[in-house]
Amino acid sequence: MTMRLRRRELLMAALACGASPRVVRAADVAVYRGPLFDAHLHYNEEAFAPYPPAEVYAQLQRSGVRAIVANSRPNRGTQMLASARSLARAAGVTVVPFVRLYRNRADYSGWFADESIHRMVLDELAAGTAAGPYRGIGEFHLYESKNANAPVARSLMRLAQERNLVVLAHVDDDAIDLLMRHAPNARLVWAHTGIGGAAPEKVRALLSAHPTLRGELSYRPGLIDIDGQLGATWRALFEEFPNRFMVGSDTWINERWARYAELMQQARVWLGGLPAPLALRVAWSNAAEWYGLPMPA
Image (cartoon, rainbow, N blue to C red; front, side, top):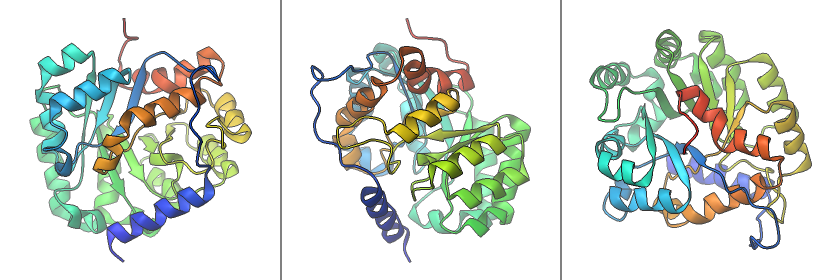
């Protein structure tokens, strides 16, 4: 099965499991108006021409996004955003660069056993970016959880733990346990908190078992209801684990860039239903504290 077909199946499952929110006017509900940290942003090569860095930073500024985790295929995309320092300053955006494991689409399906990927990551870490050193590794995908035990997956988890790098992983719940077994103190962000729809009870169990695990929320099935508000089960999880969740956009295709303002506004709507201190934690502080960023002025 190709990566594209696999991704399409996962997205269809996400739509089947989650609500399709109707448009909600800001006048109808409380809307979170503080800073956002986009903890899952891609600037892939397909976006370079239609969305040059000036447009990317304009979109971020319009949406009130003050920091991003940039991870791109190839890593040149992240380097482009990191090098546009004057644009970043003007927009008030901090770039937190990650090394992505993909030079091309073919790498999605076999990176975990490809030693050249390991060498590429080491080379990128040594080179750094114009925005400073890389702060993490990923996003990477494991479509079969057993591949979390493959040699490169194991080596990169241990590298992340040794160097205090954050890992962004698009994996199922079984793979979370396997990855953390290789590096129990590694800081791991679970992309989508399980795009396949891991039950909230399973999310709770994994957060309890792994203190350095965090959940990123783009595409998360069942997160919001038909009115765009946070579901009761997820609200309870946020209240139980207030320091463990982050927002993200997952701009993996250009259609996500075309809808960027809408995606961020949807997040602001459900964040607005939380108590203000908790909304700020999920929207900004949980990610910002991991990367040592201060509260924006």
